[in-house]
Length: 249
Ligand SMILES: NC(=O)c1ccc[n+]([C@@H]2O[C@H](COP(=O)([O-])OP(=O)(O)OC[C@H]3O[C@@H](n4cnc5c(N)ncnc54)[C@H](O)[C@@H]3O)[C@@H](O)[C@H]2O)c1
Image (cartoon, rainbow, N blue to C red; front, side, top):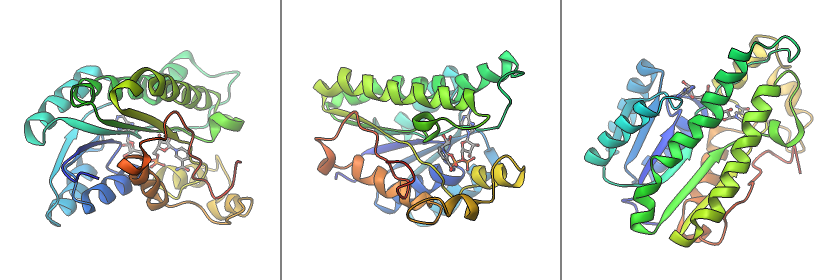
């Protein structure tokens, strides 16, 4: 794969997004890391720059189009046109459906679904112009078999899967592929917080029900992203690539 292709990763300060940014940077790609955790983003991006990697790091709330547009303008200026987008940023919180306030539902949709719309739509003109592009969305197993007390999250992630497939059809003619990875249990700060807050059992208890009896790592997800964004994956589009230890099949 051409090493000068610019990669945008949202939610890149932590967890899977950080692991994905680290792998693309290690492979020699210019990487744009976007997040809302400014201090963490600054420290993690500094570590990557210290390895010699070409990194843009900036604040962008994916639910705010103006912030995405401003970040992309800066990325294009510093790194060049965007070829690869990993729409990873997301939140998750258990909430009882019967009493869920509309604002809670709306915030989930704004970040986890509309955020993916902004992240991808704003990058597509570069991919279309250069007739090459790769889109990977990080959805969730919650959309495949539902998730207790996460109706809003499951619905948003289901939307992400539909969006990913629709884009695969609409933009295949430009040599742009669009695939989604729906993880189940990945050992990240988000997953650990869910367990610490008592929303889900401890990670090792959940992992015992997965055929490959461990939680996934950010590297497991990053490895799949690397392949999907390579020239070797040019005939794979519109797919749900399950990287889940066999937890759902
Ligand atoms: N960890 C799991 O087991 C698991 C399972 C299935 C799906 N997912 C999904 O994977 C993705 C990454 O999750 P993670 O586990 O690495 O979590 P994480 O909390 O470690 O990382 C998510 C990052 O997204 C950032 N973020 C949150 N809201 C944002 C916004 N509005 N704009 C920009 N950045 C924002 C956070 O600051 C954080 O750095 C999420 O979309 C999540 O829903 C996680």
